[in-house]
Amino acid sequence: MDTYNSIANDSQNFRAVVKKPYNPRGVSNTKANQINKTNFIACVVDFLKIAGLAKFNPWLVTAIAWMLQSGRFIISPIFVQERKGDAMISEAKVEALRLLTANNLAAVDVGLVRLVFYNSELMERVPGFMWRAPWLISARVLNELTFEEVKEYNKSKTLPLRVRHLSSSPTGIATIGESIVIDLNCSFASVPAEGVGDALDLLKINNYEVQIH
Image (cartoon, rainbow, N blue to C red):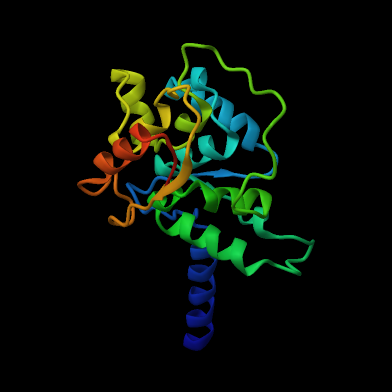
């Protein structure tokens, strides 16, 4: 009889654990909002409106990256299931989703979000409709910003040092060559290593096209 009661109690405890809401963040027992294939457009629109960022019109993957960085959202595993029944799962997509779920700061790398949603870290093509209001910063600059950076820009109109060079106006003089500047600072550095800005300025003054990484 005691054995039967023990098994019954264990069964009840197991059901209680299974029914407990999934909370990947563990913050104040608050369940994160899940972004799935039927609600992601509406979630993005609502999030941008509530955050006061809709006017900037970011790419969808950038907006979702901001949502993840806020710590209040996760992406549903349905996005990494390529066939019904969990067959043919892409390891790269699963690993990207694991990183994004384990650490919201991983969403600073928009390529991870794009990989989960579109199966590639790179944009397939430039969207056909590219008009932006003249008072907005360029799409290239905007989509480089993290959630904290875009909130600061929305408040103070100040861009972080690491992306100011992306918004520099062209000189109108033909470039004489191409160059690349690679910042090997810490993983999610908000400011490039000392001296990078000087290198960029020197190259641009000498009419080199500069790629920043």
